[in-house]
Image 1: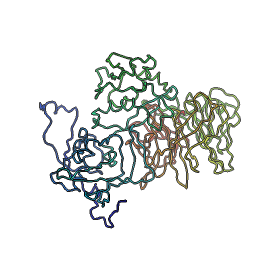
Image 2: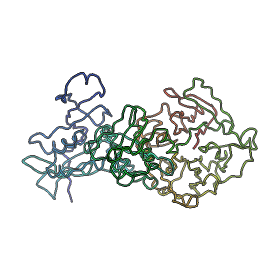
Image 3: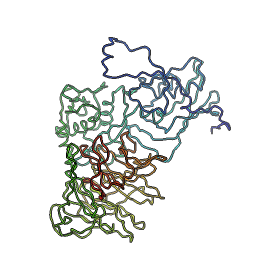
Image 4: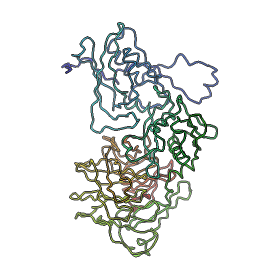
Length: 621
């Protein structure tokens, strides 16, 4: 067992003792570079200190400094930690700090460990190899990125610990035991990596599977970001999503050997050469493959991607799809026609908000059917509601929170009997319902004595109690099924604190509505938030979350489904008690403000009031 010194005399925080690195910022596409007439790389550049706390600059490139002659063991450790954050091909500079054997065998590209701050490193006495100094690296884990590029946040404040053993090689100190993965601070990780979605099929629709790739060429593979993303798509879905999605690509399909870059032609078409595993696939399967690719690379280009063409191993055309064809293959739901909310008289109403219209007159109207003023139950008071994706049915919870009713919005028939009644005596027992694209309805009973999650198959069957693995006594206070139908966001209250989780919806194959459905592997969806007050699914598999970071103010932020936070946020989130977004990016975000009622956010503007007395806004879903 290693014995640590009683007094840490040489402990230096990495972010307090930064080495100088050569940094060159390139303005890609600048005409000045083309006019310079220089065929070789510049041999000099600005020298400046890059600190882990300075933030993200995607135009900054970092190159490590090679070890100095006769450098001390401490300088070798510091230099190696800095070089791990560099853009060097094959991380060549970092390998210069390792012994020859360690440099050959080190494979850091398999995983990334992300720390919330810099690395603490200090020397310890090594009993196993006392001939050379030994250094301990520690830090607080923020997340890990696995071999499939999937991000997994840490929520328990887990500590990172690894040891670097130094030995003398050719009279120079070198590291013989490098870390098992890349180890980066949060800001270095954000500078080097970017989030992208790859897409797989669940049923007939496509599901976003978020991963992280390098913003520039990968040091190991030398692939550009688009090629890295396609390679990750071909490798298969993340471990978490894998049980509920499928890929159309045959097993073993890879990019054609030697492919390092995928380029767009003049018609915004992308050609993707594959190996011989895909040479003989049928056209329908090939088009599904191309649809997966089109949606996956769509966000990586500034211009609109018009077409994807797959090539056989001999570079002949296998098939191609346009954006319109891919949308048909993916069975994307139609854009919602209306937004809905509960008005000041506790009635369900609908409206149309057009972000492109200069006429911003808000004209809510009662929903048709039994709940309309001319229907059979015009006085029925509603607490919360959800509207199916086809906008033909509504699930409404009575104002007292005790009854769930399924109402037809296309006919004026009688008000049906409740399909589910809360068992508790207190009001607001049943939470707000949510539909998925399969037509199933989800709702939580919040009664402390009978807390449970229910699913109404097809919106017509008998409610089924759903097994949720990992609740550990927590109560579901709010939920939202994802538009893809394979995930559900759950706001869980436990020990007085509300945390947001995403669970995987598992349905038995071939059993239709008869088989048991369960929610598995809850994972944190907003670990940075100390509290969450509202949530909605948003375009491209993201979540829009209203909450407060520890020590911070209330804000509305977009989160990826893996729990990582994207930079985009909404202005003026204080006082928002509910939010509603939709897969259609042309539709505005609608929210409930405690002060102003129903509000919406036009592009590039501030919140505007729609209905001062309204509440509980929803889009179909």
